[in-house]
Length: 76
Image 1 (cartoon, rainbow, N blue to C red):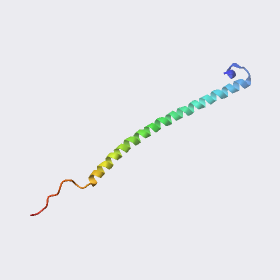
Image 2: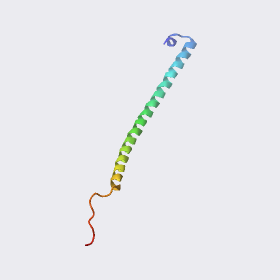
Image 3: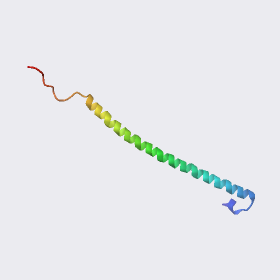
Image 4: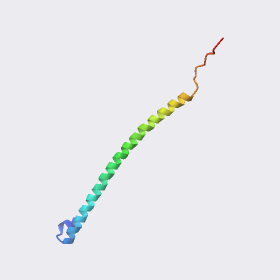
């Protein structure tokens, strides 16, 4: 704040440096927001895939078990 009030060359340069630092910080935060949004999307997809895989595995386990109905004998 003081650097924007003073009229010396050094104060002006410091003001420019401070503003550039805030701009860079804003860019970094915006990049992190995009990254966080994409990470949330990946987690959602993985959750959906995980639940689908669980259903498939359960169905395979059911198919591997022998049938519960007794077989009828063939012949006389």
